[in-house]
Image: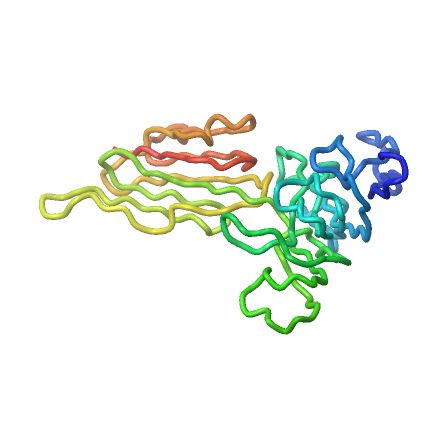
Length: 267
């Protein structure tokens, strides 16, 4: 901490944790923009995510929401008011997540590419069990359209940093690329003597930071899948290949920890 400034911490007591791998009790700073620098003003009202039942896609204690008057969390927090943040601790990971980059996410702001700072205090966050959304009370009137009642309201916002994945289909053949979540289904149809090469479907999607994305390329009739490309193939844990024994399909699995592109070539 920074002397008398109130900060938010999480304590891992290792209670109920299996002995392998060994768990060492530890305390971690939560009210921080980067994992080491404390908030420069009071932080309060922490709430931690708690998964319901046994699951491999959710991990209790991964996300902590809190409110803070800190102005050192980024441009939209230098407004002298209290904001709501979510910290991805990366301390406990579900089996479906391979890579994780800790971050602090500003939840109390409007949507869009360049939203303005909130114009009123946001307080008392409550994060969902899976850590995907966070509710809070806010006196701001610029978080959503038509908020003209001049009263405090309750809001629900996304609680995760998200990244774009853009799929591009190359070559002259036919084929389709899909993902395991049903968000992407990008198709290319080869040209014929009477029709040009066409592309259709959904070729871009957004994923929460650390999501394990699995793409499948399937060639159309009389076509072959030959290669993967794009920035996704350079992610640390990426595994991208043409299916052994055939040139008609392939898979590419990687963790989404930045905006990525993935290209699939069909001939």
